[in-house]
Image (cartoon, rainbow, N blue to C red; front, side, top):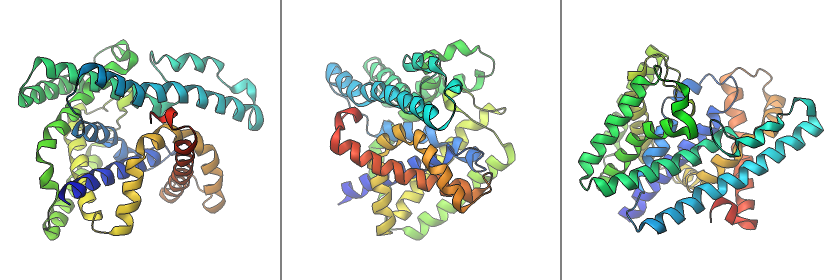
Length: 328
């Protein structure tokens, strides 16, 4: 039961995370500065929790199947989708035909969320190789955090070429991945009956997270290796966001309906992550039928919920018909 409870907490965290990813991609979303301040570190942190030592060829085959194969499939499919969309609903002259070249992720991808697949593959591989060099997890985590902090702090002072194939972004996220791997030793602490205590701690951490974001207004884009005007504040805000998500997941785990929905989203988060962006083409006009003002909190939230619904249905169909495209 404890193992099931721990897994559910992390599934709920991924479910919250994927909802925030979708919501964050709504154009002119007032909540985006809060979402972008921690949502990608959250996913790398959770990925680190489930990282396992194994034989190198098995590891490489699994990661290639789970990350690179879907990346290639959906780079082509999403390119074809937008080609058809521009041909039918917009002007084909506006379509960027050269975007097909971004299947090779030199400094961009066909669809912006797909960068995460490349980056997670890189982070997992780098961490695996570092584990071979450093057997002590504390030393490994310290070095990963040190590398991440250095990259974040110098991010504005280096040329953009350091992020070819998103390698700089990946190395900066290594600190969250390694923290997740270290925390995996203490997963039992996420199962507790002291709900009142958890709620109090949640409120305190949430207040700190919101106040820091309000004070510094630090816009972050991990994909672009941009950590805002105040780089040093990014790591603590990201960690606060991760803690708030985990605590919130413990609380929501006691609400059966929400726990079930968020767990389902979490289990299917990778597929939703991959396919959701083109589905905004359908979600936006539907949301606008109800809320006409686009630059509002309510419009952004409704658009995200509709898009997420489409993505859940599309993901279920894909898993039924062509599961291999999602690495299954």
